[in-house]
Length: 138
Image (cartoon, rainbow, N blue to C red; front, top):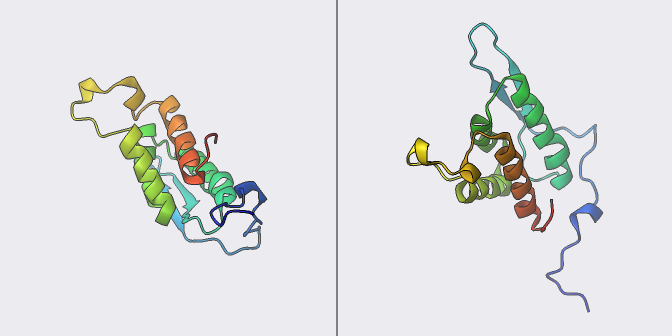
């Protein structure tokens, strides 16, 4: 007998959005560089369209947008809090707090907690996806 606690794997769940679906509001990323104002729009995501939307649209659009407006990795970790909502925001804050704590002294930051490296930003994304999906591999 199947357990009531068993969940259908996320890759078998029916897609709840398509190209015609009215997407949620957007968050505007802005560059602060003098003379080169750039704006990129990223759809806010509360998890209502499932993990496929989060990975293929929200995170991908955010990475493209942050490159367009020249956000550093440290600033990107903070800006994602404005893009995620609900359970996604809770999961993201948990990952940042546990894996990348705020440094007390900037000189004493260990390499694995450095918020300004590309490697750690990628690791944060992988940890976020694993945590949100409750899977061991992203």
